[in-house]
Length: 230
Image (cartoon, rainbow, N blue to C red; front, side):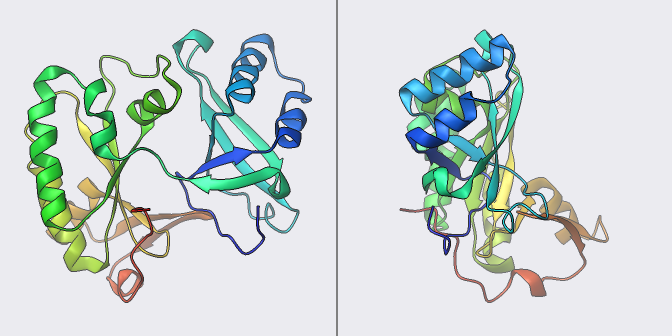
C-alpha cells in the first residue's frame, strides 16, 4: 500500500498473495484457518479497524474479518504489513444490497435512497448486510441491523442526512450506522440527533486511532467531503 494513502475505519483492504501467505502462516485454529483460506482463495477483502498507536510507525495495519455462520461468526483480528495491502476499497452502496433485504423493507429502503439522493449523500452498507453482499455467505441474522456509513460535509449537511435516516419506515431491519465526515471522523447518527437536540452534552467521535468527546462542531466544519462516491 502506498505510504501516502491513509486508511479509514470501515474501508476494505485487499491483500497481495504474499500478504495472504503471511496471514495463513500464523497459528490459527481450524475454523479460523478454514475461513481465512476461503478468503484468500477468492481474494475477498478484510476491513480496516481501529489502529494501535504504534501500528503505522512499525509498518503494520490492523484489519478484521467478521466470519459468517459456517465459521461460527467469530471476529478475527489480524495485523499485516502495510506493504501487503494492494489497495483500499469501499463497502457496497445501499442500492446494491436491496435484494438481500426482507421484502417488507425494500419499499422503505427505496424511499430512504431517494431522500439521501435529494441530500446529495452517498450511503455504503457495512455490517452483516455489507459482508453478505461481498462474500455471498451467511452473515445476516434475522435480527441483523442495516448498518449505513453516510458521507456528510459539515454539521448542516449531517443534520439533513440524519433527518432522512430517522424517517426510515421499516421495522426490520433496524437502521443503524454512522455519519462520516471528510477527515474520516464518524458519529453514530442516532447519537448525533440526540446531541444536536440538546439531549446530550457531548458527542462521541470515532477516528482511526481512537475516540474523543466533542462539545462543539468546529471539528467537523471546513472539511472535504469523504470520498465514498467513487
